[in-house]
Length: 203
Image (cartoon, rainbow, N blue to C red; front, side, top):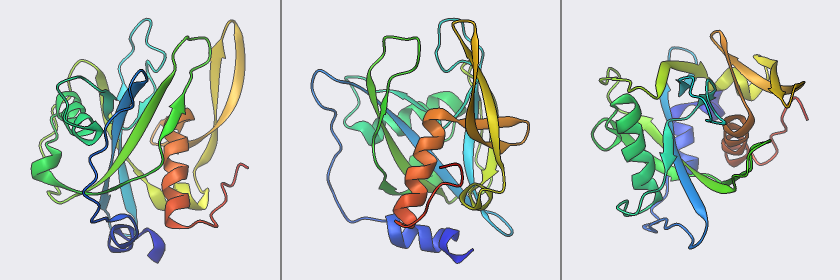
């Protein structure tokens, strides 16, 4: 699919905008890195499997690397770069090329009093064999096919339990794991940026 070739993604998302993305006052912010690389017949995105951690609403879930904005971060993009290095040892400044930002996502996980805005920044890996050193927050690093997600080939369901009740949510299978919820919304925003007429197969 030509739309999802790395060169085409760069053409659409790449920006000369020198805007520094600053967080809004009195709002909690986080930033993540959507890291892409070309594979034989498709384009892949990097995901982390978060380690199990009591009290963490995203414990054990698939996600893009990233985390909370800190006061010493110059901007939200730097947050994504710093958190990626801390979580998996990948130096995005050295090993990747930043190509653009997609729509922010408002976060309010069920059962938790958390209101936060997450900003996704897209990078293309230039070093195809970067060093990966996972810290205690990460259980695994997996690559998933953007092409399969875009076409709905790996659509599945994820069971999520809250307050003793189990609900099913759509997701994309990556290996033995499922990308769903917040990260799935970010992926869908990327697809809509690449093709404004794209419609999710689970809609």
